[in-house]
Amino acid sequence: MNVKDGKFAQRLRMSISFAWNIFTEKVGTGMIPINKEASMQLHDASILLQVVPLICYEESEHVKVELETGIEINGKRRGIDLILCGSNSKSGSTYRIAVEMKCYRTLASSGNDRGATNYFMRDVYEDLSLLEAYYTQANFDRGIALVMTDKEALVNPMKKEGKCWDYDISQGTKISDVLIQTKIRKEDFDVRLLKSYEFDWIKKGQFWFLESEGH
Image (cartoon, rainbow, N blue to C red; front, side, top):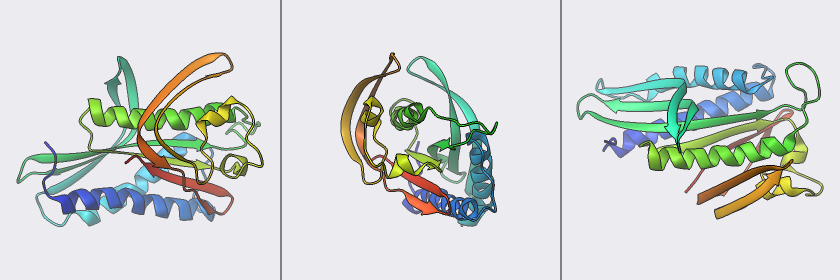
């Protein structure tokens, strides 16, 4: 049962954006080093854990942050990167937000050139599809994607060549109710997105950051 207090639900949603803004500023200035997705998840969750106590205005309001929670979607076990769960002990209601994160560094944590940008672009779309599935199949109230990269060609490409651009994540891209059926290196990958999305990146330091939610 969802929280009936819309204001509490709004505070929960805003806490994710607020923590993300802090994260982007600190990563952009180099105060927080991020070399792979796991460190991105841990640092953003750490900031969120410090923010959520500030948005509880009544003793009956409680917030829990979970990392890598397993859930079954379409017959497969998935690990949700982060779950923000708000509950009201007075009414017995809950409000759950799923968050998926993606990080692409030009250099992998090993120091080698990472490559495989096509898979990264595909994975961003897959995360959006999963977030929609969490909403329809797992009783989540909202789903948010957080993405970061230091590769400007993904955000502001000089040209768009190759089938990978079927999964266009560049600045200003807008998609709505799409079915994409494209092979990447002979691998079949079909994704259906029912909601509308807009890719609006912000730059901090040498990094680009994106917060996206379907509507």
